[in-house]
Length: 417
Ligand code: BGC
Image 1 (cartoon, helix red, strand yellow):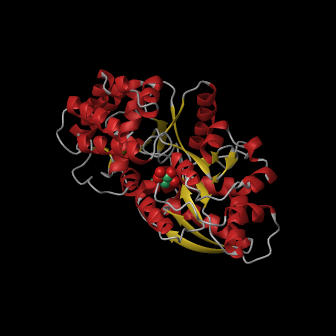
Image 2 (cartoon, helix red, strand yellow):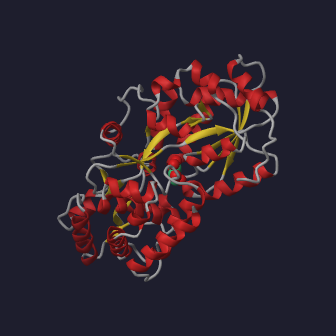
Image 3 (cartoon, helix red, strand yellow):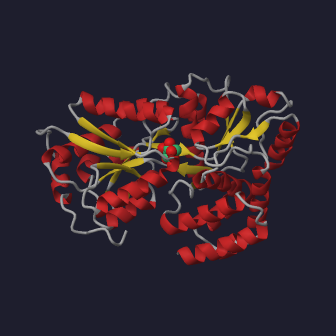
């Protein structure tokens, strides 16, 4: 990041153009990683809205869930002096790119649409840099979800577990019945996704905050963290032998087809169920992973990188305006499985899982139990996130003891800071 040229031009031009009426032929190359069935439908809705307003969309998808593959492409493009106009980034990454001088200021459109009045404080914090909007939020994705197939659970007389002990009991019964308890894709970010839900569930909200957000060394090296890795070792026993490298959406399909009972994954998984015509409460159950009252928040957004050319600059302005429009927020998020970033979108089109997410997010914000996801780059980015993911995945994919994993975690986080 420090290598990024601070001489990238266009920030001023963009700021001015965002306030101006459209004159040119708005164009935007959009870098994103939404390539699964549900994701593709959602991004198509954005393309269509853009086209309906005269925009030319240049699609730049980079396959790879969680966005790690896209991050490498973005760095290379910026260092080559050829950034895409709009990029799906989030969390502290937004701050880092803004600090490097790579992002356009969205203040004009934010003021025109009164973003301050419609975005929750937690989202404003993510997309503002030094008090100004530098990214436009698309959604809120909750991470701590279990997606379950009720028919499969019923085969062992079970319902969705509400404690980790119950999770283990149910999983043991499923194993004994020859059923895969947990559909999982063995990719580092997916291992880390399960890991953070276990940190929240076993440790609780305060422990999650100390360990994964504040990087408190006592919490990271504690017996509670040992217990987290003990649970992760159990989880490893609940996945099928073919899990390494599997994409997350293929794991979701295993639950859909009844080949596995449950998946732990953010609610982009719901986009897959929806794309397959599955109905929540009937074909599948959504439930938050066992925890007292936490909510692991992830939020996608687009940042507009400094690009030259009137068409590009107007394309960016149009995109920013569309993305936070009430209609688009509704259409997009129904398809994506997420909930709107803005709080005033009518709820009628959203299913029960989305309504639960909306309600839980409000109570979590009120009760101070809203926590940024580590795996999904809200609590941490860069080297620190990398260190968490490396240790979580190294432990999951070996016979490393919990004590050794904790020792490695402490060392890795100290080094990464
Ligand atoms: C993103 C989602 C995406 C998922 C799988 C998450 O980090 O926030 O938008 O669907 O990764 O790629």
